[in-house]
Amino acid sequence: MRVKSLSLLPFAALILISQQCQAQPAAGWKALDEDQKSSPTTVLEWQATQEASPSEQSPQWTELPTKESNDTTNSVVWHTVPTDADDLATDPKALASPQPNPPSSPEEAQAVLKVLAAQQPSGPTFANDKALWRDGLWHPQISNTVPVGFGPKSVMASFSLAGTDCTASGVCTVPATWDEYSQQLQAFGEAQWDWSLGLGDPTKWLGLTITSSFEETKLQLGGRNTGADSARNLFSNYYVGFHLSRALGPDTSIRAGVKNWIDVKDCGLDCGFPKSAYGVVSQRIRLKQKQDGWFPNAYVSAGVGNGEFRSLSEQFQASVAAQRAAGCSTYGYQPKQPCSDNARRRAVLEAANFGQLTPIASAALEVYPGFNAISEWSGRNLNLGFSVRPFEDIGLVFTSMWNNLIRNCDWGCNVDVPDYPGGAPIPDNLITYRPVWSFNVSLEFKF
Image (tube, rainbow, N blue to C red; front, side):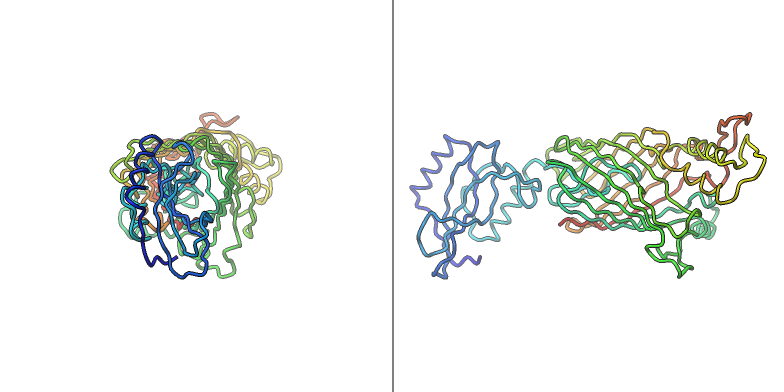
C-alpha cells in the first residue's frame, strides 16, 4: 500500500487515549487497512485499543482489513492484537508501550519496530541440524559432533561441506613440514556433503529433521572421495537419518534420532558410516537480557549415544567379537577354517553400528552475536573449537574443531579381549598421534 497523505486524531482524542492507557495495560499499535474502494487516496488514522491483558497479546505492526466505516477511502489505524509469533525480528512479542508520536511513513514504522524488537526479551531457540535459528536470524553452531536438542521451525534446509584432515584410513602423525602435512591430507583426509531438511514445530507438536550424507564430493581430499574416479557420482554412496525433537520450553528442547539409518552404497563392504542412535537435551542459559553485547548466552547439551559415539576401545572390542562370531581369526581366536574377506568386512561394518550407549555432551559460550566458542565430549574424546556466522542476514556458518585432545585410547592402548592376555593393541591406522582438525561450512535456509 502506498501512503499519499497522513491525518492524525484530534488532540482531545489523544488525551482520552492517554487517560485510558493509565487505567488499562499499555496498548500497542497495529495497522488495520480497510478494503480499497473507489477512492485512490489513502488516509492514515491513529487509534489505541486494548483487546486483552498484556500477558495474552503482543503489539505488532501489520496491515489487516477492517470494515468499521463505509467511507470510500483507505484508512489505517494502529491497533493491538494477540500474536503467538516466535521470531522477534519479524513479529516481536510484548512490545513495551505505545509510541507517543505515530510514524509518518511505513518506512519509519518499520524502523521503529526494529528498534522496539531489539529491546525485547529474545524468543525461543530452534535448529535444523546444528546451526541455531532465533529472533529471525541464523546463529552459529553450539556443537559439531554432538547433536543438539533444538528442532526446526516451519520448513528449514541446510547444505554443508564437512571435512577432516585425517581418518582411520591412515596413520596421523605430527608433520615436520607443510609438504608432509599436505601429503597426509591427500592420503588420509576426507570430505563429504551433508544435507538436512527440517519440518514442523517442536513448540506445538514435534519437529522432524531428515539428514543425508554423501561421500562422493569429487574433491581431491582423501582416498574415499572420487576426484580420480569419474565412474562415481554424488549418489553413489549416501546415508539418510531421521531425528525427532520436542521443545520443553523456549530455552529447553530434546531430540532423539538415528544417524545413517538408511544407506545406499556402490562401495558395498568396502566403506560405510556407522548407524548411530542418540538422545540429547539442550538448554540455553540467558546470561544477559541485552542480546547485542558480549556474552549474552551459554548453551549446554547432554545425552547418550552409540555407534560412532562409543569410545574407540568399545568399538574395537565390538569388532573383535563380531569377527569371532563370523568365524574369522582375530585376537585370541583362531578358527579351523579361515573366513572369507567379505565375511570379515561384513563383520567389521556391522560391529560399527549401534552397540553400547555412552554419555555425550557439549557446552558453548556465545562470545558475541555471530561467534560461539565450543567444547564437546564426543563419547570418545574432547573436542574444542569455534563457530562463526560472518553475515547477519545470510545463513552462512563456518565451524572449526580440534578433536581427540585427550591422550586416551585414541592415541593408542591395549584393549581387554577374551583369551588374549595383556590386552590387544589397537592397530595404528585407527589411532592418532596428534589432534585431528575438522571443519564444517553450511548454508542455512528458512522458508
